[in-house]
Image (cartoon, rainbow, N blue to C red; front, side, top):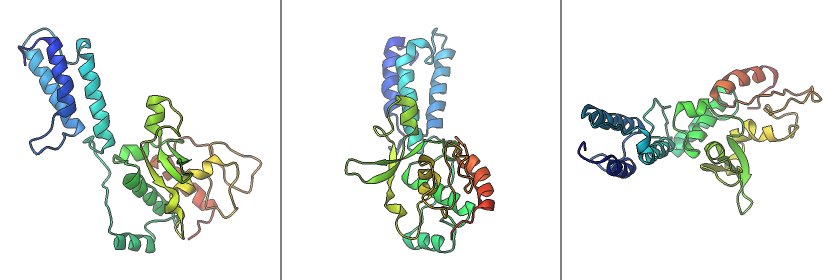
Length: 245
């Protein structure tokens, strides 16, 4: 490695970052790949050959490295401390709904349901992803056949600057809202895009703008819709509005 010219080494590293795997054929976690890169850089520096693989002359390989980290992170392979994700059997999940662990019967049950759906359908693996969820990160959209769905569009919006209907990372179709189990995304997100609740019996309405004309309902101006904010907002709302069982 220390005998390879910088230009050639940069080219080799581009391929290395994209394709390197463990002996069992699986990809390294993002944290492991980062450690490997640091180790390679130490080898180069200790050899005293006058360059670093993190310098400007290695821009193209650094770009590949960062792109791979994003891919790994989106796949739930960041290696950071993550939220434990438990997938239930159909009968087990039915029991969780029956005893009230899921649903909207309490703030805790609602949060549990949102986290479960975020993890299972929207590929949110890290606890930080749940905590940092922002207003607008999950949108209520329709596909080419006019079927409604919730889409996770945050990264597409931040990285590409595109319209939310053009790019989305993952989605969950609105069929999960049918029957007795009201969709948690309806409760937390859909109401944010209408000026008034559909009925006064709506459990609660979270919107981006306060409506002082509607004094009979609770209105909030809240941009952060992640777990940190929800833990603070939902108990306040629950004290004033009866949550339907």
